[in-house]
Image (cartoon, rainbow, N blue to C red; front, side):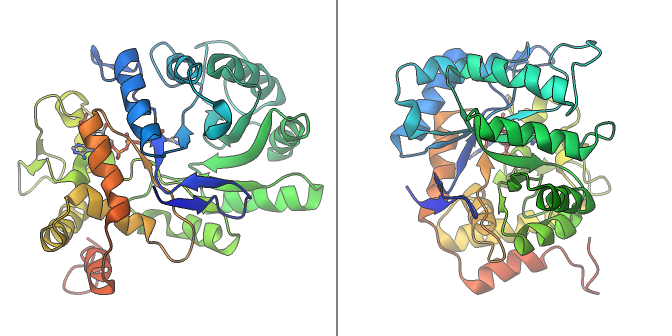
Length: 336
Ligand SMILES: NC(=O)c1ccc[n+]([C@@H]2O[C@H](COP(=O)([O-])OP(=O)(O)OC[C@H]3O[C@@H](n4cnc5c(N)ncnc54)[C@H](OP(=O)(O)O)[C@@H]3O)[C@@H](O)[C@H]2O)c1
């Protein structure tokens, strides 16, 4: 297992984090990962030396189920060996007037439930899952700072938001002497990079660790989807049982014209390196030079997990990395 420093923190994590978004989650009647499968996946990850686990209070159907699965698994393990990350923002109890967002009330209500379900006294990393337009960022940061001071949280992180919002939050921590965000979690992968370029520039400049979510574009960059219509990049032939076969949003959310071109380059590098496209796509992300990049991998089966962890054994040449990068531009140098 390859380990890395988690950005500017003093904590060491495996260079691929394991994500649990699909634990106990029901989509169109399909439960992707039940309790036994979740524990099998966590065993496979931990037995290979993986120590960095990503979850959120709202993962699972009903919400809280993913954290509960992890907590039950941890009962048989040494909690100190793992770096646990969870998140707050989205509604936990639908309809409650203070049941979402980043107010002092909601964060304080949620942290104890998260710790209780995970069966731990502290979280290594607590992310704000989104930016909250209705709560002043100072209120959120003061509350998170209190959680660090009272030992319930070690580090704080920020998931998807605009570059200016991240910058504002860092500035606010600085002038108020609050603990700053040290880790970020954007949607980014080989075919979705320019879209978050400014945000990534902030991370590089401020030495924030970047933990990309959906690093394989929900499975699209594994190469298992085929294009179904040359005029419509979102139309895919999806293998039975894959995310794309039951999630109606798959095509619009994960595919694009640019994505098909980048995937072609990833496939060509995979052939040359005797690796799979998933391994190449992950290695490409892990090799970012401007910031520490620790992708959060999702896997439905242990075979997928083993394959993805194999990205750690792969090395890409500068030319191969550039080929994947350059595939996003057409012959005139414009982005697809
Ligand atoms: N902060 C946020 O807002 C946010 C949002 C989304 C996710 N996340 C985090 O990021 C984690 C990863 O997200 P993700 O699941 O979308 O990641 P992903 O790696 O882009 O997609 C994972 C899915 O791709 C397929 N797959 C993975 N490896 C494969 C392989 N080797 N061969 C074939 N298929 C493979 C599997 O789906 P099928 O087999 O079912 O097709 C798997 O569930 C989540 O668990 C969560 O922790 C955070």
